[in-house]
Image 1 (spheres, each protein chain N blue to C red):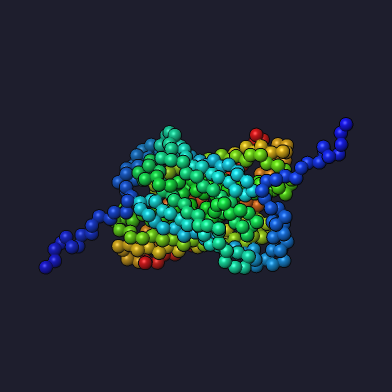
Image 2: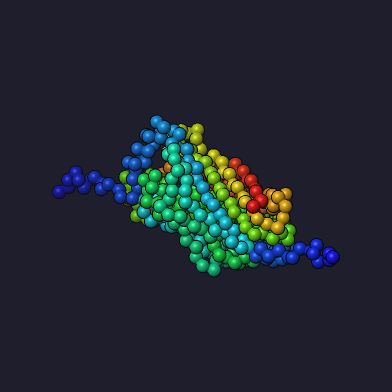
Length: 192
Length: 192
């Protein structure tokens, strides 16, 4: 004996408040000035190639906002660069941002499509030829020559539905855009 | 009574082993295959938009390398995105990478030019219009519409020398390159 209820999926519980996000989209469509955000970081040099960055306040929804707490990150160069390895290398931190952004998007899209996620694991690899940053060969770029992201996702969905989640996340990911497209950076300096 | 010694600057002590870096440059000029690095991150979804990334091993100098310890980073969305704010927002993490890379470069170049740094502080601001990631307006990009980096540097040098340090660091910065120029990202997915 089968009943209709066996055909109904339980609502997905991925921990993303999709109703609030859809509400925000509707509100910001009406008041686009609220959508203008400014993200910030401050950074202080410690010693050698070691720095500490702090994330706390940002601007958005028309006013000053703040994280619940300060987040601090140490960056340094590894010992094979004759440094002290007091933190992740700055290029590795970029990979962290990319992974975090894509995975957050996957969770949000899954929730919106009522797909229950069980695990989302990403492995990122980025090639870099040091001949760039060491100034050995001007034809070699300083940054990554490419990034490979491999997702392994356990979810209540088919391979095709899972692939579509990742594709949609990529389409709307801020960090994916920052890495794959050029962003203007202006640097100014003042002697203290 | 003045002596010649008063005209000689004490060697700068910024904590960067420039001799080792120049030695590495010479060695990698001879053996460019050693300059091919692969940086890695792994990431695991926790709940909602919260993920945890781990940095540990990387490939370079022809073999597997590892940091002295694992570095872990939590990323999440802020409460104004109806999330739990268990970590910095992924886009903010990109700013951390940019600050860490430029500041490490400033210290290395200062050491090479025998300029004593006393403090190096950076403030980064990046604009982002949420109409992009929310899919309100397809003409608005998902990522930053620009980044402003302000350095305030106390050093045993003129304003011009300090500005030149920052300019040289920018010229050889991996993360500056990654942000300002396009990088190819390939994403693959497997159902677990």
